[in-house]
Length: 291
Length: 262
Image (tube, rainbow over all chains, first blue to last red; front, side):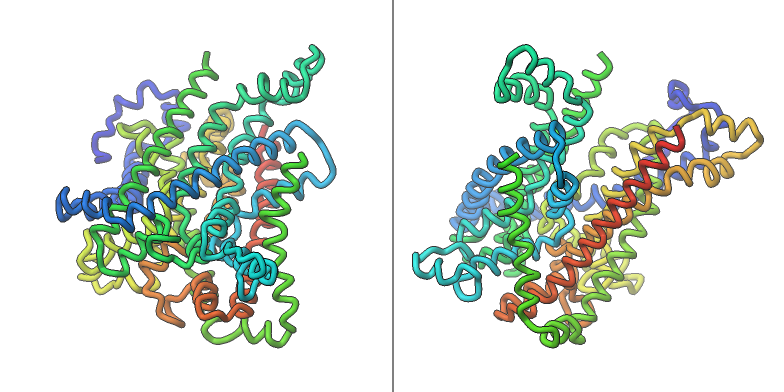
């Protein structure tokens, strides 16, 4: 695959003179290693999902997606994402805005707190909500029992765990963009008499719309695909609290590989779609930057 | 502002502090017993040891990939570049079953390893494969902007002073990339020690051999041994905090090296 690299292709690259570039054989070798590693570790796993999903033909594929438990898993996943993603969008906007456009005490602590969900194991993200809301061992157990509320092994627990895991994505996409833009435009708007809200809606928001869009897409992909945290809080009751990733696990453990991979192929398509959007936005941004 | 603080407190701060408060209520001896049993210690070794090897592998190949993607041109480069982010976007459970299918005894890749006597699934090698997969983008994505911002003048100067390309790379370029490389390594390592979804399918989960620490927490919870789960989670959290702190320091180092160059 790497063999097609020819000397001619490098002619229009800015850095071609031999003093600051590697000999051809080194470039060839490094490119082959890179492409080989990526093919082996990333491309083939992607292909294998679809291969396994369609191994027994279209009928089996479609039938596994129409199975009642699979449908209910898809519905639950969509519901969870529909609740947790909007909440994290609002939070992400508020957090990025507070962090980049204002200065206050304890800001670096806030940023660290924001990054924590990246560093914490998903299993622990699930565990913390069990510690709080379990009806047998949780802090709020008496209260929950008294009011007959169920958080763990139910939708609220799944939503909470998903929110915690996907919390940084929108904010993390927005912060660098907002930082790069500085505060000048907002000050200008405020001086011209616009209120805080108006400034935010007609100056800050339009400036970050592409970053926000990607943040949302990424947050959504992670929300729909979250496994570790959700598996701890959901109890994985088939047809009730089983999300798509959890049902994939169930099917896989029941040696129903085709059905597991059929469901997995949907999440894989979502991941591929997310990557396409990301590259489209980067292309848009670089085009804007050039013009 | 108010939203930010309230939300972070409710969703992140209170839940995570629950782990520490719960553990502190256990008493030191029970806590120590929970985190130092033979099975748990074996899981630390598996988790941290293999995560380290996987991050190291990612550092080496990530450097090559980042270099090739920022400096060379070849057909299909855009697609390859986009593919790097796949482990960020692909659900871990999907990655887990895909890698298991691929590396099993009858899998496309696994058959060759098994023929050579290397068991790539239900073994520590399997855990290594999964952790390498999920940690890969971190090194590439931390290095790429740094490589792109390198000043060609410095390389030209080195060359005009008689350095050959290898000398230039190891004495001029590599030191400039080192902080970012270490940061990427630390990020991949931090991600790998907490990983659960992609590992449990491929690891086989045999106690003492291929059982990772997050799985210990899940198993303890499933058998209602809450104190055990909490205590082990406490150890993992402290490890994550320390790593986060180191990563923050590394990023500052990275920035200062960047500034010193310009």
